Length: 21
Image 1 (cartoon, rainbow, N blue to C red):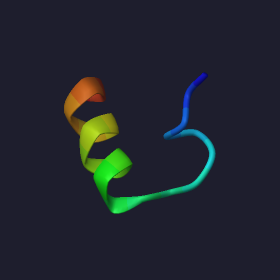
Image 2: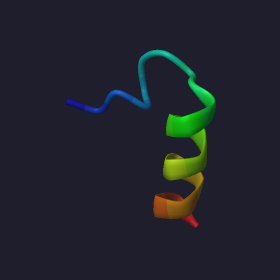
Image 3: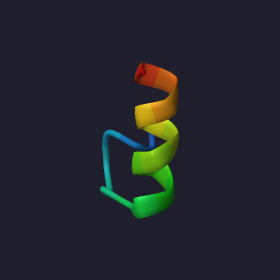
């Protein structure tokens, strides 16, 4: 389940940016 899609956390945001970028 994509947790980064749920609560916008700084740790998840950085991970999402790294995974997307």
